[in-house]
Image: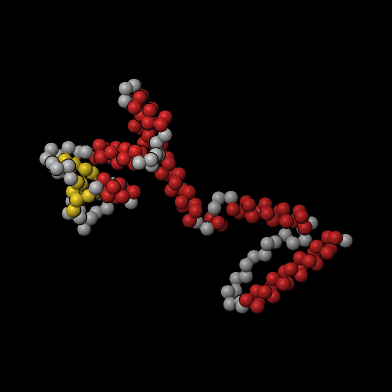
Length: 182
């Protein structure tokens, strides 16, 4: 059974074919890219020498995507990366890039978490609701500060009961507006 917490081991044979040790079959660069997109870490090693080739293959995957017009890296970033290999900046560029991607992943996670929570759990929702009530109170002269009405707690109401409730609320609002018009 595969352990998804451990990197997927891919062995490169002398023929340059890539072998997935978990499924016992040959894979392509696109297969490896799919594993990575699915959240799996991979480790690619040369079968004969034992050298770690992961970085080389990851760069090759990026280069293939870029050459097919799936550009993610702007030209200025690519140029700066090339420059960083020959300057003093070489020592800080890897840490900067790693921190930038960590921040990006963290931000994406927070956005996804916020999107999955109901509106009431969003920061500022209570303040927004309070502001809406204050606005309605100011507009109506304080006649009905509990607008909008709260949803009924009784789930056994029929659609006719709900329609009657809506009619009653509408009649109340019309009466309040008539008082304001005098």
